[in-house]
Image 1 (cartoon, helix red, strand yellow):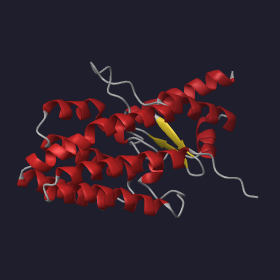
Image 2 (tube, rainbow, N blue to C red):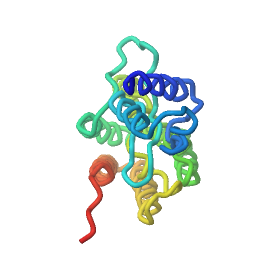
Image 3 (cartoon, rainbow, N blue to C red):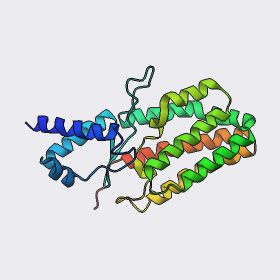
Image 4 (cartoon, one colour):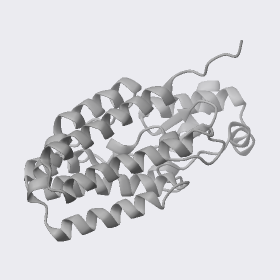
Length: 237
């Protein structure tokens, strides 16, 4: 019985996420609210959220709530498997570390003034999206895609396009300090913006070594934040 109720709730929430009714990065309704709206127990709600976490459609941030992630494209040919677990997301960062520093290095020597201006505009958009995680995620991905485009290598660009925005779909705590986030969340967002700015500065200076290093530092920071925000809370003694 509980499994049937849980499955029904999963279908309902999955549809809302895929259809965009709950946008990527948006916080899901609270457990009590979902229980009341669907007339189920909180145990059923927890089971449904756990299943959505396994499907990679939701990330539950301890102490804050559950947030929608970017759904995969519908049966896209050649689409990569969705990062469903913490191990998957860490592996995705490792994959990006193998690609994006080189893309940044190439972009430093090949970028055009128009591309540099577009990157600056996108960074401004990212910096102004504090507290709006879905918007921040879109600008974050767009910045990285522009770097790959400026690299002038279609295979690098295709690699990022194949991943799509899911490569940014990590715990929303690093982008959002609203909805009950900790006081440190604003500092995390500031760090994300500063790391992108370091990449842009290196591209502006046409310094490939600095660009690669800045991109590596940014992705290493993403990995660290992902681990920190996925760790269980410490118990008070």
